[in-house]
Image (cartoon, rainbow, N blue to C red; front, side):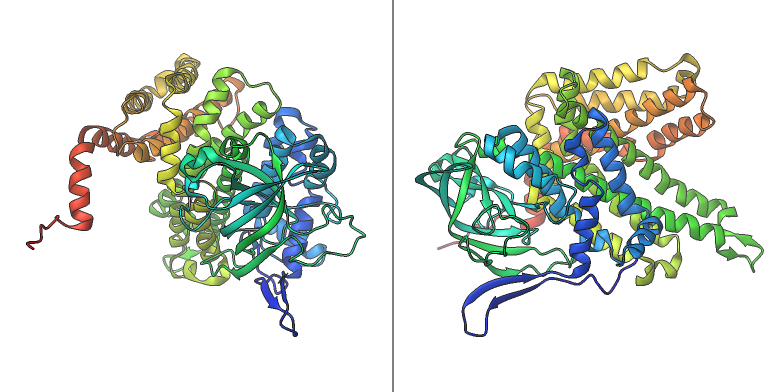
Length: 560
């Protein structure tokens, strides 16, 4: 999608001409239209209408990946309705992902009144009626470590329409979607000594009274004692309003049981992980499409050949294509599991696999997609480095998925890896994952099994190394390489499932699908990832000490 002059960064006006604090946040017309366009298309409403039952997640996310990656189609549609903008530049999926997560939390844990009055507005297709929601967790002391949350919730003794009323006092250091109507937020109801066990989840209106009718005048921005101190100066996603907020006795309503905030907000974290993966995959698809189209028209050798006829160049595009296929199958495989879980049709093994793969898909897609985009950019040579083609913006915004989104929602790849390690404490989870891998391999028709014998041996070895590495006690340096290897194994099995279906169904693409599995296993990086896990298991204790010396230097004793 091209950029347009109707999408611009937000502007914060903190004081009026008389010196009164107003904290008015001005967003561009393009940003507001992007949000309205997405809501009309059923994002996130599709997921809760459940017209396609457990496949509703797949259908909705398929629309989203097109919105990110199919720049031509969305450009035409957006121009047709009167504006030109860019989903990745605007990062409109950020507030919509948190709206999706907040809707799921209220669907599961909200009071009767929240479900009747707030949920319909979070999932509405009518932009004049629909709400968006933020999600406030990150604070200055802890970042991703919410156990250090300082925001305090004080009960007022009053019961609001939506439940027990509290006042919140604290500072939220990184709040995206600051122009939303509400937010879900963590605040401390227990002692600071309780760490994360003393946190509860709250619904926080941005303005009071709440909720307002679409025909009501908009209340002042400071009406719920929420002050916007500054907008973040970010590397990318410039039109997304991200701010530092202070809550000064802001009114809030308890969601779920007190002191279970981490458990209660987990649906938001899990859902936004998948939105992040979709953004990574969609951005990679966009860059790959540009590189592929360029190869079809760029002439070389004095104009006698096209790049598409140069084997060395095509082999470069193959590597990107393999990565895209693997990430697409992995992401939609996990999306399918989430859809089944939400509709109550997932079996126990699928639920355990979903828990294991949700942090994995976000980490793996974010780590790999950005490198794939850079490779696609290099396929255009110097032309790829120009701003006009969109590579730079896609790569810059993909860093949000790799770094910033993870800081807001769930931490870096390392933090996600530690989450995988926590999941692996239950040995039945890794056993369920391994059983799925083995069952898919066992379902291979004999002819296909013979064709893939060597790569499947590599896959089996990777699975053995992975399951061994996740057994207690887990070596300290294992989690990060283990989450990458989990991504390789899972993406391969989803590709294999597709190849088996294509072979059995007699699809014309079955030979290509089989070759994709072979090449992804042999050339995609699984062998190196397996070795990384093996070395981490073997050398963790020695490396921990030497790593510290390399980074921080040898400890020196000072004579007094």
